[in-house]
Image 1 (spheres, helix red, strand yellow):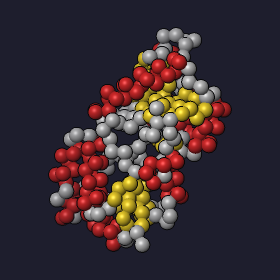
Image 2 (cartoon, rainbow, N blue to C red):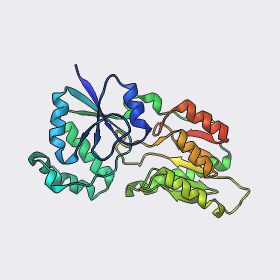
Image 3 (cartoon, helix red, strand yellow):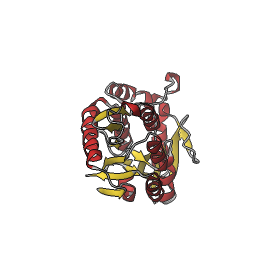
Image 4 (cartoon, helix red, strand yellow):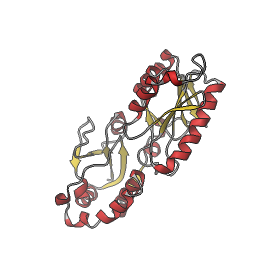
Length: 265
């Protein structure tokens, strides 16, 4: 009988995925505890780890949650994993997305099929439509501008989110993440040229060239609270490209806060 392994990262997504699957094996990179029970493994011993998955009859692997680039210990590599280092280091020169794609290739070279969260749990990824509230024409223009900006910055492997207000970019998501970006946007909300004009939109989308089997953008109830605290009108995202956790709770919180939620086609 084949099994599914979850490589759990930080955040609520890993817990959601594990709860939805049938008795998956759960693992996490050492030093990146996901908040749920998980067996640790080290990237420096990647090949023995992959061998253990095959021995456990794992056929499918799903990555769930945020994972940062780990600090590697050169003395901890086993001989077979050390042979992969030039491949991974070369990919890292092109950014985290390229490095992750290289790691996925290595998994599949060991006959492990890497599956996307949206493939295994499609209900987590809303189709096009407004989930709550009503984006104004100004909000729709801001969302369109945000989508253009992310399309342009995607090749630089910067981030998956941006805040636009009255056509102006208030913040772009970088390594510190969504919460830091929204906090920054909130601190600088007075930069909007018209204080009585549109409040602004937080927009999220995958990078144009990223592998959607890993690191798909995610929003949830806490994202709504952060967007509300930043004084924004709502949250928009690329339909079919963003995971919405705890959808009922997320929609309810947005409705209570007077924010719209819009999966933009």
